[in-house]
Image (tube, rainbow, N blue to C red; front, side, top):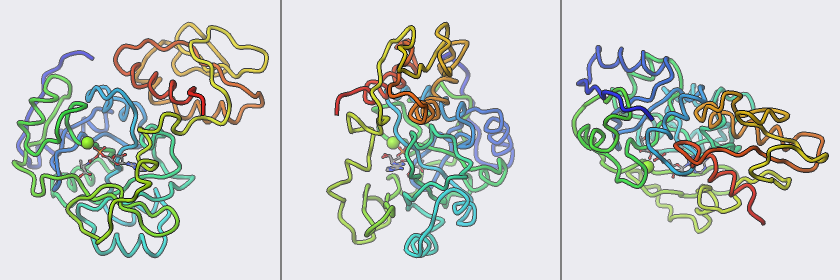
Length: 306
Ligand code: TXA
Ligand code: MG
């Protein structure tokens, strides 16, 4: 990605106005929360979410936490049963993330959930993040604002050291209160499962099946239910071809070969290919540079024998 100037603005009305402007323009912005600094982007805009991955240099797509204003906005995105509602009412706003079934009509880009039928949601308690959620008036996907493989940032200086030159703005509100990422609990059927311990202690121990819930780690995670052939320049008679750049295909990730656009469309295209009336899927070559590495990581998992 191109080097750019990273502005640091102290939290206040001017910083929030500039952050909201950038969010609505599809850019990622580093924001303080009560846990750690997050790299926020418009969760309804797949290309904005792709820019989070580009900035972090993450070599794979993991589902991201969606930050919302309140429980009412959360219920537009996920299905809440009585247990989920009770936990949300007790702990929101605050450092508890709930993984819940994604609603069919949720206005969330598929890259946010990495194509999963569940979504991680929380209502942050920090006034800066709350102000941005109100000003931008949309849900914000936000992983921790560090480059891939680096520790989570608890000060604006940590964000600058890790992502300086890669993002347009850091909103600085000093040191975060908890300094530790939110507790993650899954309520997707059966008893609640603790996926990540954190500031909220519900008396649960980490689920032994937690790895299944942390999907990036499974080699054949969320693979389509059809064989997938990589690096295809044309389709066999029984294949649905996903194109890229010069390979047109039955549908294309990006006619112009733009990796941001391709990342944003990847999971939609895999779902579409899975639903197509032919038994196999083929996909055009994707360059390994930049976001292409994360796209290829997911495609290799999808193509892995299982
Ligand atoms: O405190 C926090 O939670 C911070 C601040 C910025 O809010 N955010 C954060 O996000 O830690 P991130 O992306 O670094 O961590 C997200 C975690 C990952 O471990 C991911 O696997 C899990 O949430 N996750 C997200 N969606 C999930 C889903 N649908 N199912 C299971 N796990 C999910
Ligand atoms: Mg993180």
